[in-house]
Every structure is written in structure tokens, then in C-alpha cells.
Image (cartoon, rainbow, N blue to C red):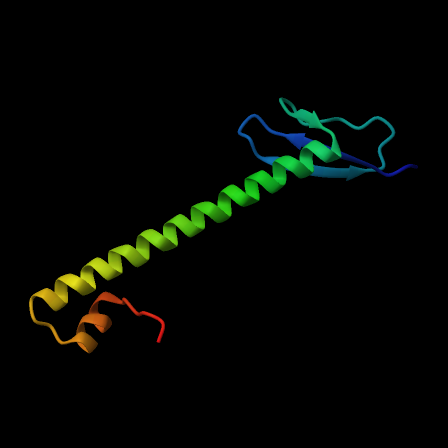
Length: 92
């Protein structure tokens, strides 16, 4: 039996691939069949979007820590303590 790989986009936007040797494979309900090229392109875009989301989250967390650090300094907390309390560290 020949091995076949199918690429799917689900209604929720998720992507999956399935390899089978079934002569007449049954595809999941509601999926859109994709070509390998379309699947690869959509997967790369989804991975890039996720990485951007992670980068945005890290940037927001760093900004919040820096803001807390600056506020602690403004009320007279020593720098080392302000860094420890806020979790804000800069590269040396």
C-alpha cells in the first residue's frame, strides 16, 4: 500500500498533517485539504505569529518590571533591593 500524507486546516485555524496507507482515507469532518506548499506556508506564518506573541509578552513583562523598578527607586528603595523586588535586571 502506498503511503499518502494529507495536510489539513481545521475550522478553528489549526493545522495538522496525517500520513496513512489507507486506500480510501477518510478525512476529518470540516477540514480544508491543503497542498504541502500551502500547509508549509501557513505553518510558518502561524509559528512566526506565535513567536511574535511570545516576544511581545516578554517585552511587556520587561517593561512592567522596569516600571516597578523605577517606582521603587523613586521612593528611595536602594538599587539592589529595587532590582530584587521588581525582578528587573539589565545586562552588564
